[in-house]
Image (cartoon, rainbow, N blue to C red):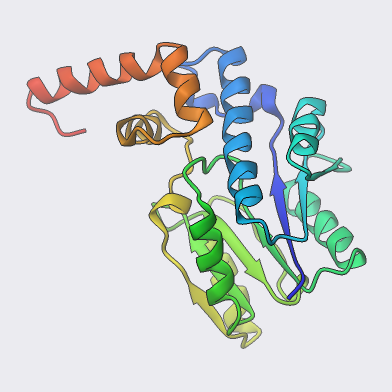
Amino acid sequence: MTISIIIPVKKLEEAKSRLSPLLSTKQRRQFCLEMLTDVLAAIKRAGYIRQTLVVSIDPTAHEIAKNFGAAPFKESRPDLNQAATEATHRCIWRGARSVLILPADIPLITKEDLTQVLSVGKDVAVVISPSRNMEGTNGLFLTPPDILPLRYDPRSFQRHKREALVRRLRFRVLKSPRIALDIDTIEDLTEFVALKGETHAHRFLVKEGIAERLGLEAHHRKVGGEII
């Protein structure tokens, strides 16, 4: 099976606005790049992916992609569905029989997670790995790559399921705790820091003093009897 991975990266200056109470614009930008590094590192450790495309207009994201042997792909306009679709067509043109679309903000993903997704995908046309709230799509494996229209929005998990059902495609829902943890909110960030994973993203938060601050705030809330 010839597999390609697509990683869309949102415009970094506008990313993760809900983390602004803790991270400056510069810190949020760098944190996004650190998470992208973690995702690319997991793919590289897997060692069996034919090609990886990092979809972004940001030259720094493109440079990080090249450092991991991935190909930079410049989107024509900042629309996630269109950008991912354009990247999918490029993968097909380059011989991909399957694609896996992953977000750039799931730093806990491992090569074992990738292996699990691809293993499940051997028997079905579509594998959907949801976010923690079961609303977003944090992993979408498609065989062939254009078998399903992309429906990324705040409720994309249900929309991708619906598209598969309407087309009577064989699909599986794969719940993975590491893939599910995309970091958008302070709550997500707090949980990520508490897990203390050996990731570039976690080391960045420690270096910037964010991890310590979150730990102190969590401790104060527990002492006060509140549930985090």
